[in-house]
Every structure is written in C-alpha cells, then in structure tokens.
Amino acid sequence: MSLVIDMHSHFLPESWPDLAERFGEPDWPWMKHHGGGQAMVMIGDTPFRPVYSASWDVAKRLEEMDRDGIDHQVMCATPVLFAYLRQPRHALDCARLFNDMALEMCARSGGRIHAMAQVPLQDIDASCLEIERAMANGHIGVQIGNHVGEKDFDDEGILTFLHHCADIGCPILEHPWDMMGRERMNRYMMQWLVAMPAETHLSMLYLILSGALERLPQSLRICFSHGGGNFAFTLGRVDNAWRHRDIVREKCPSLPSSYLKRFWVDSAVFDENALRYLVNTIGDDRVMFGTDYPFPLGEQRMGSLVREATSLSAAEKSRILGLNAVDFFDRNFAPVGRVAELPMRDSSRATTLTGSRGA
Image 1 (cartoon, rainbow, N blue to C red):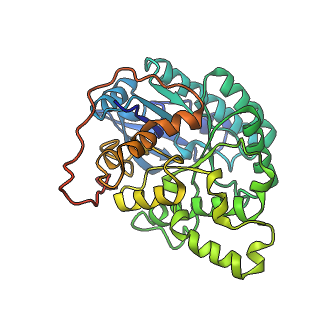
Image 2: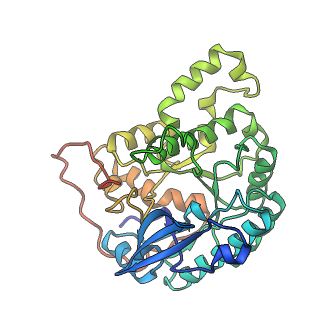
C-alpha cells in the first residue's frame, strides 16, 4: 500500500484576535461564521473567500483524509494571512500567532497533520529568526509568497532567506499571492486562473535567468505550487530565447532547462495530460502530490488525479503520492490511520481526467 502525503494544503484558524484593533489599522482579515460549518474570510468589510469547517476543524479534516485515503497532510497558512505589505513588526506578530495556532491543530491530529510556517518576508532578519523558532517548535518547512511588493525572487534579501533555509535544512513551498494585472483580471476569477500561474512561472524564471541558482547551494529544497504554473509548458520558448538573445543569457550561464533538477513542483494541475507532461519535463522524482485542500479550486477527491492516471506507472504513482515528499522533507511519515487503498480507475476508460469539480 503506497504512502500518501498531501504536501500542499491550507488552514485557517476558526478565529483569531481582531488584528485591526490589535494594530490600529483597517482592513485586516477575519472570519465571519454563518453556522453549519460555513464561513466567509473577510478583508475589513469585503468578502474574500467562502470556506468551510475543514479549514479549522481537525476532526473534519481527518475524516476527509480517511475518506480519500490520505496518510498525512502538510498544511500552511492561506496567503491572505502573509501581511507582507504591512509594517514588519505587525507581520512578525501575525507569523508567530498563526504559526503557533497551526501547531495547536497539528497536536490534535495524532501525528498525521504537519505544518509549514509563514514568515514576515519584508524583514529578512526577522524571517530568519522566525523560521528557526518555528522549526525548533515542530514546523517541517516554510511557505513563502512569490514576491514582496516589487521585490521578486532575484532580490538580494529574498535570496538571503532562501540561502538561510538551505543552511538550516528547511524545505520551502512557494505560493503565489497578490497577483498581477488586477485592472484586467477582475472578472471570472482571472486573478486565480491566469495571474496565479503566471506569478509562479515568473518566480522560477527569476531564479534561473538572474543567475541566483548559481549562487544558492545545491542543498536548497524549494517546491513551486500548482505544478509550477506555466513554467513547464513554456520552457522550450525560454531555451530558444536563451540561445538567440544575449539579454536572456546575460546572467544565466547555462541553458535554462539544465536547472530543472533544482526544483520540485506539486501535482495540482487537475488534468492527466498536463500531469503526464509535467512528469516528463520535471521528472517523476520531482513532482509531489498536492491538493490545495480544502478550497474550491483544490482537488475535490484528493488523490484521484494521480491514482486514476492511466499514463502513470505504479512506480511513478508511488513516488508522486508519497516517496518524493519523504525525500523533500527529509523525514519519515508513518502510514498511520489508513483506510483501504482506493480502487484504481478501469484502464479501458478515456485517459483524460479532470481532478477537480471546479471553482
């Protein structure tokens, strides 16, 4: 029976202190409960996202993990809690608050739920200290946004933090946030459908084309969410530009595709053909099972995309579902509390699979 580790899921506490009152500034996130396990994340007076009890209720979370045959889940804060554009001391206070609340949830899970921390990335010194504190307290990595204002992944401060994480053995999950193009993408969830994949793509290219990966240690473990966004599907275009335009090669001494083994990505692409292409491009040892649970844009039947993919071998499925995460986090995840392995799909059916029911 394959070990199954969902390495990309999110949480929101059921409630938290009134941050607007705490910091004397408006428009902080808070939770508006409707009853029956339903709630709305609010930003000040503006609705941001509907959520349900799996975001905060450990028992509900475990119930749904058992339903879908998930051994372990790694959860991290919803990016709306990052507070990167706030005062650094307020962002640090938020990081400590939500990091500690995450560990309280993990403590009630019987060892099956684990947490990646958040840090106040606008203050690199404070971020380095907070991730050390969080890792010492039980976090198994850190989730960071893909930019801080106009600072991208070629920023010296962000690179200092990435280097520090490599030095202390802290795995990193990049997650896009504060997406580009608000003026043109304010309808039909275009911010999530177009801008979000583009943000991750941008971060990966900044690391490569700026020469940052030449300076960062090989021990750096960084995973890019949502299958790396658009990266794999436009890599040929980037290689072609590198070959023919010196401004692309200026700081990047090697062909961009030669850096693929410096990255991991998750499997949250929701289509079997896309997953197969991702595995072919990145490698079956660099793709990890991730769901974006428990949000509407996440995988609704967790694990169905990988389990039912007729184009993946049993060995590839085993690596993607769990073994790659063991390597990425460099820790043992015991197969505890498992339900029986869910049946594979009949291979006589069509090979194209959509792994999520929608937005």
